[in-house]
Image (cartoon, rainbow, N blue to C red; front, side, top):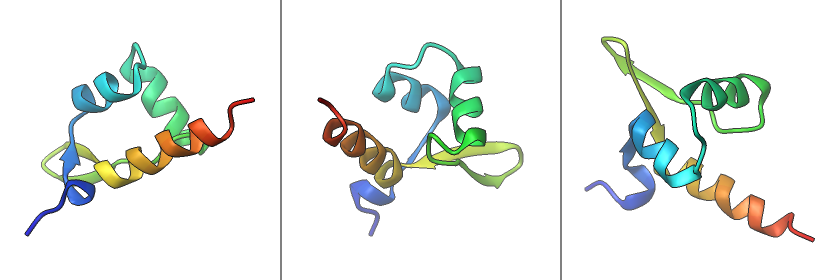
Length: 65
């Protein structure tokens, strides 16, 4: 059984959830270590674990001043 935290998100899904405007920003931040890295699920398909994105978003909220 797949839970919400195990769900795999597409680039479009991640852009919608995070509010980032471009794929370039997403990949650049993942490469720099300021955003979760995607998973390669084969055949050129890239996905992010929803739990990783959720944890990243929660981390942003705790850093607010």
